Length: 402
Image (cartoon, rainbow, N blue to C red; front, side):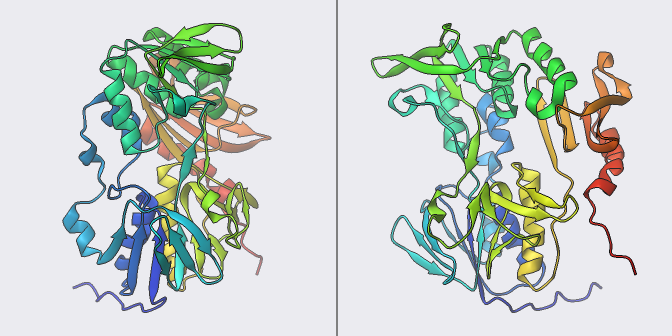
């Protein structure tokens, strides 16, 4: 028989701001570790915690209804014995008092506060004045775009990064005409480098996506309050029945102005994800000191948020654990599944170490200055995980000599 779960009593209450995958993971990790104190989870959206990666794929395509993205059933959430305050975004924090104010006027205080408010999508000037112009960050965003795709013959996606590429692939799968425009010279080239970026560019072109790369979107055009197209800096006009702006995002930290926390590229934290006494941050908003790399890092993906949540929960309960992950993200586009470990920069030397690009399955190794910095699998997930071991040395803190 397994030993009983130890009773952990400190802190007396924990307030989690962000009903996200990361925020939920903190609450669950605390309970698994035996924490019996009060838990409160505040969320800006009315929905219970849900998964974001399916939004640009299964939800947008109509293969999933929105409820299927929910991370836990109602019964599972009830078993956490946490209070969920949903549809009431946080508007301010007093870090010294560990006190959070919400839009409805609530004032919530706890012994420890965890910040997990994620990202805010960037917008183009004037887009909020036109119907048919979308961002894709929330479940409601995905459902609204899906409704427009049922009637729009032409979709323009502004932004050639991972989100823009996934939206373009999903829309093409629905039979919608798609134009993908972006500043980069290759689809996801800034994320994955020239070899893989070039392959993704050819993949999209081969599926009928019209590419307008290396050029900025200057403005939106509209008629009678609805978008009609996108005007590029080159002077070309792209007609559209719907537009998605996927040009990037920024950490959702505006509500933390005047909180007493240090805000730079996100909430600045130490190696334990601690932003101040009793205040922690995780996920997209957390900029923390990675002891293995010896520098500050901020990552934007679901895997990071959930892994970081485990470290935050441990440190809340008195452990002393630095967060030293190997970065990881994945993307699915058409029949291609890509897994990326570490850093895959444009200046890296890229070598195919298993499989072959012409076979549509391979593993590539990224090296900078003789050091392996990244590993990518193109339809070879298991092999990529095995090659990931070569990254361990670069991301592990040096142990002091005896």
